[in-house]
Length: 65
Image (cartoon, rainbow, N blue to C red; front, side):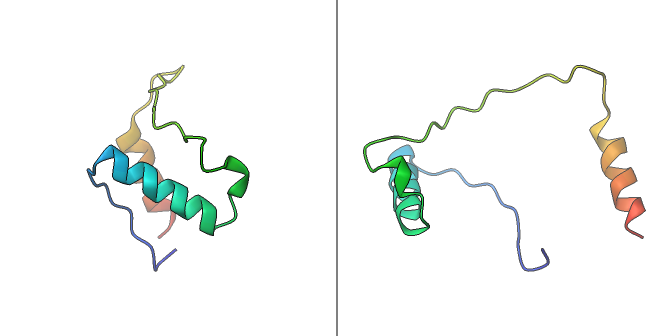
């Protein structure tokens, strides 16, 4: 995964919908059809137990060394 990066952008919703349809058609996701919209709604989920994301990430990073 060395040749990939993660990024966040803000773009127009219409442009995003067009992009998703184009990519899904080119990459073999034709079963979705051009009329069906892929939902953009993201629902946050609260963890069932108290967690410390910073601590977990540090442990994962330290384990790679």
